[in-house]
View 1 (cartoon, rainbow, N blue to C red):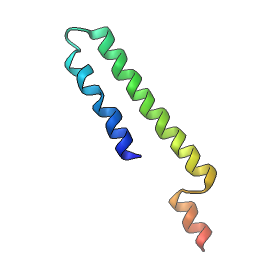
View 2: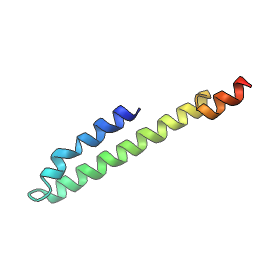
View 3: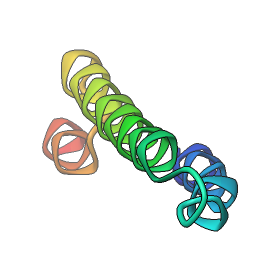
Length: 63
C-alpha cells in the first residue's frame, strides 16, 4: 500500500514544476491526486476492517 501511495505522490512532481506557468491546472492536479491517495488509503482500511486483517484484530483472534 505504501508503494502505491508513493507512486501517487510522485505524479505530483510535474504538477509542482509547472505551477508557475499553469497554476490553475497544476493546483487542481495536485489536489486531485492527494484526494485520490486519501480515498485509496480509506478504502484499504475499510477492506482490512471488513476482512479482519488489521494487526490488532489478528492478535486478538489468535489468543
